[in-house]
Length: 199
Image (cartoon, helix red, strand yellow):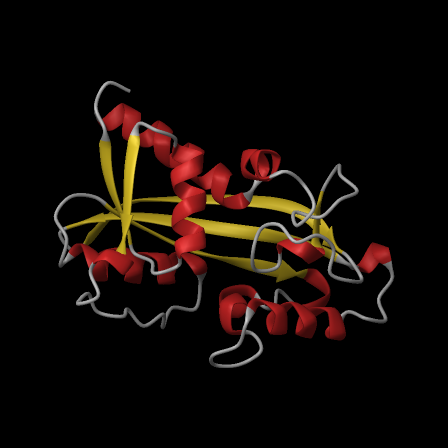
C-alpha cells in the first residue's frame, strides 16, 4: 500500500490491538480507545458475536471520524452447548482473569475424552462510520481442547486450544503461525480484501 490506512479499534484490549496491527502490517496505523479515555464504554447487550461487534463499532464511530473496527470473538465448545461463546471474556464472572476463565472451561470438560472436546474460535468484525455498520466479516478456526494449560503464548483461551492439523496449542505455536490461521486473522483477511476494493 502506498498510503497509510488509519484504523480505529473499538477496544481497550492492548493485546488485541497489537495482534491486529501485526496482522494488518505496516501499511496500517492502528489506534484504540486507550488513547481516548473519554470515549464511552459500550455495553455488549447483543446475543450474538455479530450483534455485539456492531454495537461497539457503531457506538464508537459516533465519536470518531473515519472507519471504526470492532470485533466480538470467543470460544465455542460443542460439549458445553456453545459456551462460553459471547461470554468468553467474562465466563468466570465479572472482573475475572483469563486464567480463571480457562480453568473454569477445563473444569467443566475434565471428564470428557478427546473425541468430545471439539471447539472453535469465532470472530466477527464490524466496520462502522458515523454510527452505521457498513460491513461485517466472520472468521472461524476449528480444533479441540487440551486437558491442561500448555504454553505461555497468546492470551485468553489460547493455551487450551489445539487447532485442527496440529498437536500444539495456540499458546505453544509461534505467533506468526497462529496469526496466519486464527479466527481473527481469517476475518481480518476478509476485511483487508474489502478495504482494498473500496480504495
